[in-house]
Amino acid sequence: MIVYNVTTKVSHAIAADWLSWLKTEHIPDLVQTGCFTQAVILHLVEADDEEGITYAVQYHAESQALYNRYMEKYAADMRKKALEKWGDRVISFRTLMHLVH
View 1 (cartoon, rainbow, N blue to C red):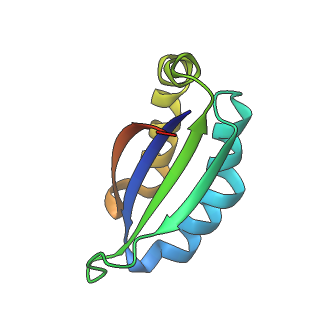
View 2 (spheres, rainbow, N blue to C red; view 1 turned 135 degrees about the horizontal axis):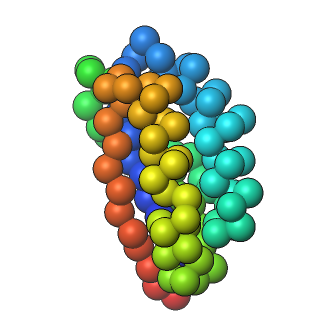
């Protein structure tokens, strides 16, 4: 399994709205691409929350090919939508991981 991890620092002023959007729009849109089977939202508890709250969302893909499909067909549009909605009030970085059994 491939885990696509998106870690995001969210401004306190928009944190509740961003989390609601994440749960009701963004994650469902990503899962509907057929590239991911689920997403898990995590709050980083030992992060410095002075400038905002830090979350990690882990999207699970059954294969590297499905992740690649997401990156090729959907990622640019998803990132654009998020940037247009939230601008610089969120900062994200992405990592790709392989589940080790």
